[in-house]
Length: 399
Image (cartoon, rainbow, N blue to C red; front, side):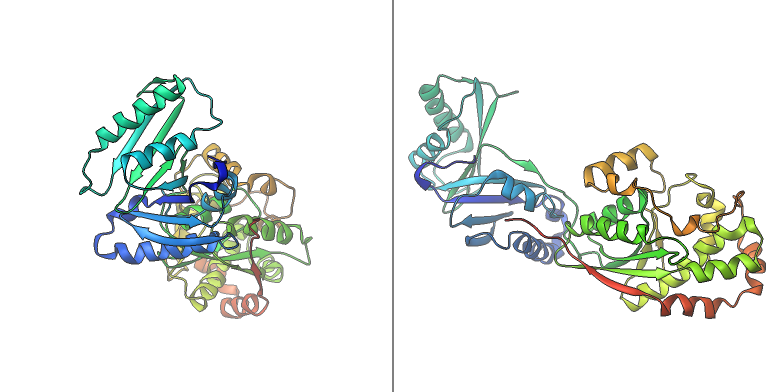
């Protein structure tokens, strides 16, 4: 419903909550968080009324907007189950019929169905009576056939206490939980395919990310840094406001590791130092867990034993949302998110700097403690923390 003849009916957007309805005693808090996120995403549009009513957010605009304008904004709001551009009418059957007929102008279809929902149960008619009344009027006017199973056009009608809302297209939202409702997490993000997808999955569950990227500059070029900034910008589209990206130099630490440890242990040692440094950053930023893009068995460092060896240096949880996911599933989601093309651009990852030819695939905590005996761990962690560079990454939503 992109066009509304003579602006005869107010243009609106209806938002359905999804799993927020299951939150019982905390539901109002979740809904307020979602309302804040929606308001933020719609900033810049001319809104005349913004309200929450009977399990829906209802936004009334001062002028019509295209469906794309709403999709660009509302499709990236976690917590939204379904959203629809709609027109507003009265609750009388004649009012509803006139609004439906107005919304049909310019449309050409063969079959249709009417799906009315009488949310306000005290009105003097049933949902089925609305279906029959409107269906009869549409059929008589257009000559289209009713098809309740697979119609060319579905006319939805939500009838509230004081108004009805008619829409002929609706879209699946992102689902999940509103941004920030599950607390903050520190995300170890590389320039690869996996970690952006892992970050997005935790963001969908309501986690607010603090991104942490380890690089080996100046011993490698800054391509991974520039790439990660772009990737984080893509992920920021799913949040409200700017997100933080911490850039941590690891090259000097890696050079010291190389002089003190056998080649096969390098990658595991790098990752243990990343976790120690990232944990210190995360705690400082108020995060309750770390997130990585590791998937079981994908590379040598991601065996069960090596993951356990890395975990042993952490004092907060390390979440791995992709741990049981196939690579193709990760790639498919990365394409949907728009991060894939960025991730496959060539760059020098920090773990590729001084990378061993034959990394260890089956390590133990005791083994690594012996390997690290010759390293001044506290000083090296402090060195990494001293070099952190912070950036605020934000996205720009077009009006």
